[in-house]
Image 1 (spheres, rainbow, N blue to C red):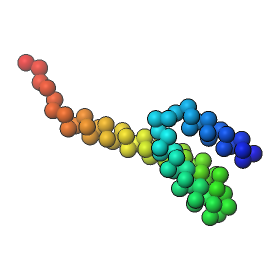
Image 2: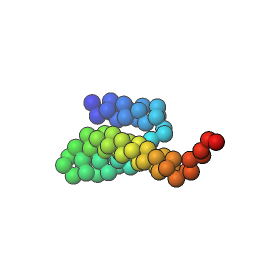
Image 3: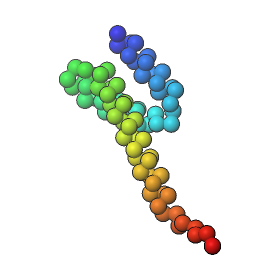
Length: 76
């Protein structure tokens, strides 16, 4: 059962490399926290999902800030 879950997460990581850094860092943090309560795999999967979403939001905020910093050209 655990190996199926790990294989599924690995397949998801391979299919979306753009936000893999959030998944990897969240997965590591979740695995450590989950290990403390004897649910390391569940913690890793949850951390991966949370890290992915957090990283995606951070990138969106950066894009918005970059767009706001560019001067708007007015048409004459």
